[in-house]
Length: 80
Image 1 (spheres, rainbow, N blue to C red):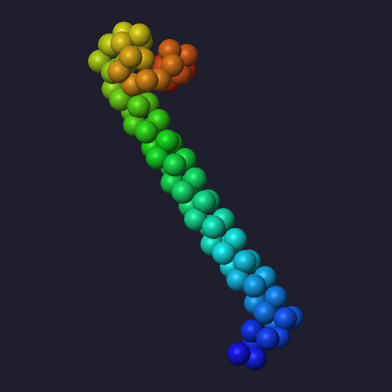
Image 2: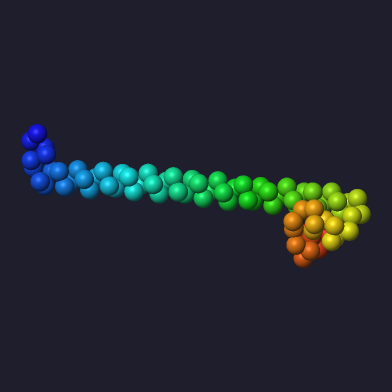
């Protein structure tokens, strides 16, 4: 009751609560973005791994690009 009547303390509390919410929101956003980036990088690494195996088996670069989704330039880069 006293706390809610003290305008300065109530405002300090509200500012602190907002800071905590903002911090938690930022952490959650960064965690989601990090997960997306990690999944994307993992998928690209797997595609490169598949491309290497296909190149070792003599598959055509165009076919590898179709199967893996990698660009022909990227496959030629891997090939070297």
